[in-house]
Image (cartoon, protein in one colour):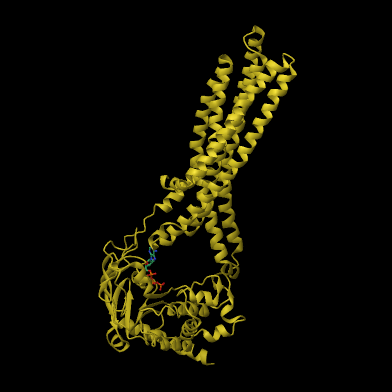
Length: 580
Ligand SMILES: Nc1ncnc2c1ncn2[C@@H]1O[C@H](COP(=O)(O)OP(=O)(O)OP(=O)(O)O)[C@@H](O)[C@H]1O
């Protein structure tokens, strides 16, 4: 939480000005009842118009000063709170960018979105209110109490007894509110999560006619959010009427004892009016305090959630002795007795994996679904770190290299082609900042997508919809391959990235990849793809079952023979379909 509050440090000066202006406003407000008492006692009761006019004019002048200070205070409060929110959002975004995959496994996408948006807004509100009214309200209560006691001790004592009782009540309510508002934010996460999944999976939902089921799912989550919010707001709703009731009873008490005192000659009418006036202002201030306490308890819950993200250490970082001069030159990859399990799990997904991919070689990784192929890939750019053994590139343990240098030398094409909104050109240049048009075209030609792009309405300037919705699966895959090729990486990782391509296009693509001086690792389910590789790795349940070229595997691996037999029939059929 201290970390979150430290974001206010750069704004000490405007905060100081805002608080100073607020103090002037407060002084003006506390002065008013005294002047009113003077006007009543010395002007109205003595029928002296000049006193009424003089002090009346002074009152108007003070009100004007208070008004001007209030406006400038609001201006500074808005500026500080907006800048504070901007800075936190920026830091959160940068922090999330530095997250390892393990951290992403910990925080869902929906919760991260709520934390960067709604939670930060709650905290912004509290900063705005602090500078505008938070200090003013308690000071007004304390100042009002002191002034009331100064005007008349007996009548002032009524307020002195009631105020601490009210404060205890409000603090109790705040502690309840904190718990409730934390669960409101959690329910908001859940509703966001359902909404997000729906929007992303809209096509599937329509195709499966599952909209009723999804409506119900969202309605359930929406109802839970409403129920939690209503419970939290009920507490807020209860607070102010309760507070008004107690304060109005005290005003009645002041009027009752006041009238007795006036009759006994112990106090002036003007003084009773002044104390009632202070009580009224304190009532207003107390209801402000109760509102503020609610906002604080909500912001405290949000602050904790934001602090959790900011306090998450990047667990995959450069080692202290990482050598900045090391970079990938030849692209030799060696796994030495590598084992791996996902952080927070006990089951190993890779066990004693040892193989070498020599520079310029193409290695295909075959294996059933869930056998650990993607996990193996993720270890190469250090998206996760090995649990045992080591991954070496050009004979260097990758943990001795700078992360950025390591990742810059790798072209990674994930299983699901992910494109960004923007033009086709922007999407390919995303792989290499400042790439020339010639470089883009060379990459798209090799990825077998240039001709397709030229047939698009605005060719390279065609704007892609969200996640590239206006492209086919195979087109998306080839665009993301082009995006990786443009980096001319020393190591190219294709995670089942040719699955949506027909056999001919895939063969052309793989042939053109031969021209790249890079070591290529291809995860594939297709024997036809594996056949183009120099070496084939056969994974089963996280273990490397066999490795070698097609001929040696056909001879030595029973499992490989089974896969070939099961697939070649299918492929002949597929090929026949493509030809016709
Ligand atoms: N983030 C994760 N946290 C925990 N376990 C995971 C995570 N990702 C994958 N796994 C588990 O690791 C195992 C291997 O998954 P992996 O994605 O590497 O398989 P794969 O061979 O690439 O499968 P596919 O061909 O279906 O993509 C699976 O049992 C999976 O449940």
